[in-house]
Image (cartoon, rainbow, N blue to C red):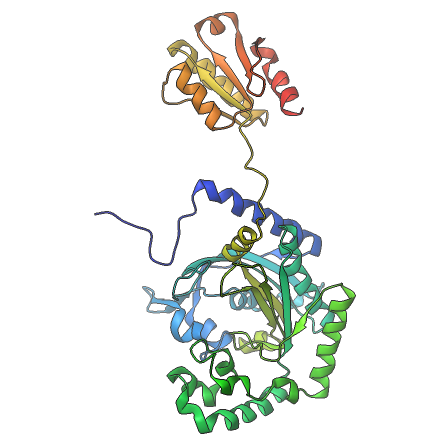
Length: 424
């Protein structure tokens, strides 16, 4: 039987993993500058955590979660997103008691959603996310958005668009919900079964429906902006002011609602405007989630965060022809000729590596010509050749691949010689 990678997942091969490593390096550097600390949560959590915090009317909870019953007859779910586990950890470990607030955290890791595979969208995918929990200051909203944009800019992306909206507080949402129900109710039979269910539970989700997105009733639906109370409107104006202070351009989209129930006040998306990127242009999304910690027994701890797909970040880089510097080349390739040279060659391999020199060795007992071809393929900067004569003399042949020059070097002087050549 031939096994293949599960549908909706992918193998990331060595020819590609170095790109991921470069992205992860950029993320670490940006988070260090912004002073966000890494948190690592389990890949699976209690199912109820996502039902309560993500929302039982969302597509994620209704259709996309990978849920199983463990041997203790407990319902567990592979995490479909990162905010709920981080908030759970924040409450469980009493981070609200830390002297420095807000608590600023970031994570990277696999998420799991059962959805149709598309370009840059998998059933197992990798997200980088950041959360700032414990402050209701609109300036932290602008900081979180700035961090997301900074990561994209650090990898060279320029064709970006930030879209923001205010979802208001509970009072605004209640008034808007009533207006949406009145708007959609007379024609709800025109909508998909999911939207018909959402009408009473959470009509805001109708605006985010992928099936009915072309229905003219969505375009003519009452705007949440018309129902913002003075406090919510003032908060949104402050967020926009801080974005302007940070030199960040934005567009306001009153129909932006995001796909998770826990958002309130600020919601945002970062999109690619690069030609040929694809129909799904969203690279990153996030927003404020005041009240989420209270939902699972914690104290009041307003928060804001975002999540971005690493797969889609790499696609955006490809669309803009942004590439990382070439994968680090091999410093030295050791060629051994004959059995007598094998152990001295292996010993030298370890000495060079201990000195921090990227070194490899032929393990296939090939002839000199075949080993030289291997050194070429690996783009080795230097080749060390050891044969019986070299073992006897306590020396090696050192060849510089760029110009073809070759010289005999005593083994005791080799490390210093190689280091000089690698730092030129």
